[in-house]
Image 1 (cartoon, rainbow, N blue to C red):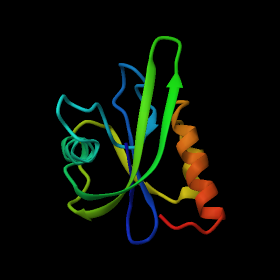
Image 2: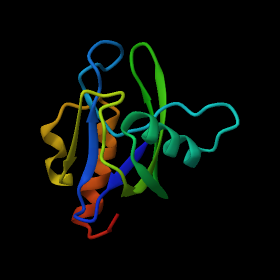
Image 3: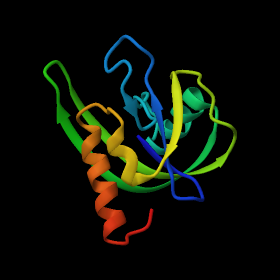
Length: 129
């Protein structure tokens, strides 16, 4: 998953298409790693496929194991810097740049709240992204 920041320190989030697992929820961009693909290459590919923007993958922020009633997910989260392009709605219904402290205003899948808590903790302890 990508926590993409812009020069103003805002984070890019997108709203999943209706239907399917977590339809209509907000999320941090990302997806499944393909066989033989590195995490970094996966993040770049997924962000390009979902939003048509260019990013630079930075530091690993956190790895989260989360169990839902019907699936178990491993979220490998990296800080990414926005480089170029206008976000497009290729595989989502809405895109927003949000201040970290406003992320709680959006409905995310449960596992994502661990990412939000980590981002808020970093912000309050003056650890920059």
